[in-house]
Length: 98
Image 1 (tube, rainbow, N blue to C red):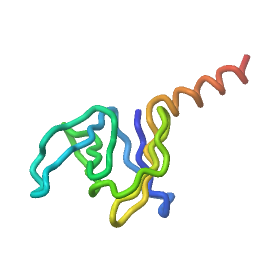
Image 2 (image 1 turned 60 degrees about the vertical axis):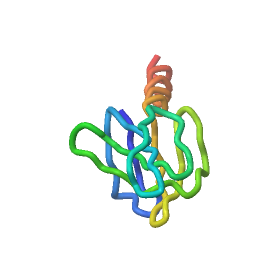
Image 3 (image 1 turned 90 degrees about the vertical axis):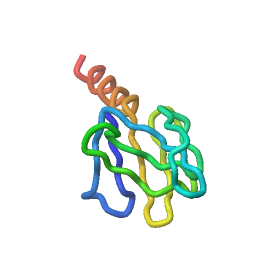
Image 4 (image 1 turned 180 degrees about the vertical axis):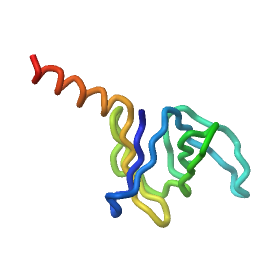
């Protein structure tokens, strides 16, 4: 599971099993979709094949790891917690319980 949270609104979040980074041309037409590798100008589509939520284009990437992607758009600042983030938490709890 992936979870997108707004940095300035702790009550707002979206979850999704699948996500895509959408690359567009200057007119907004989709050029290509990517499973990973977000870049400036790309938009994030959560649950791209169902009840989709899409951000505005990325203006700045603040942190990029295999567990968290922290980025800004024109209007918002987001943290995307990736599947590996939750897997690491689960593994820590599993070790504590032993």
